[in-house]
Length: 293
Image 1: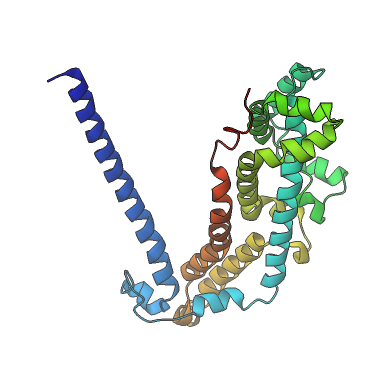
Image 2: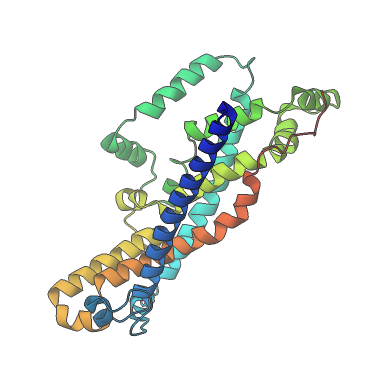
């Protein structure tokens, strides 16, 4: 048997094992998600007895009623949406602006900025100094505390900087010949051609903003500024306390675990809806054939 045939046979075995493992992992994940949905729409007695595995044994919406019984959850949902949208737009624009400048080799002090940025990726001031800084800036109990501290990420800047480096220099040179300045080149040329990178950063930061819990926990005391994550945390804590104080009456309709599963679905569904909308921008190779050198 030739070496080529041996290599071809090994590739077939590798692809078969790889597909088998991926199929198995996918089935496990899908079954776990389906089991969560089944337990959500099952009564507390059915869940406790183990009857609800593949299909709700006793259909019930008590878990969702317990979550949405607090009317302030809609205000928390609005806060989460606003801080996610505003935070993503500001974060992506600021990181892209810095990355575009850092992508130019003729930028003065570029090496110093790079060293300073890399240091921040490995070292931070810590929780207490960060809290004192937020307090000194007057950001406690303010909506801006969700936006300003997360305005810049050096890691995201590196991703965008490497993408800007791949843009053909002839595009920028032709724009300069037409009289365009750096801001116009950045806004009308660099950003539109960087949609895949911008969409990736937007998705990463959007998920981070949506799931952010510690910011509200540490810096927000006003309940009107609570995001969805913080409000659902309160609902879970209240349900657990109620179940410990009077377990008989609580277990009739719902359980603390059922409420936890309900909050999991409530916080996950928006991300699952938005992800397919941004997935099309992940396709690389937008610049192929755009310019002929």
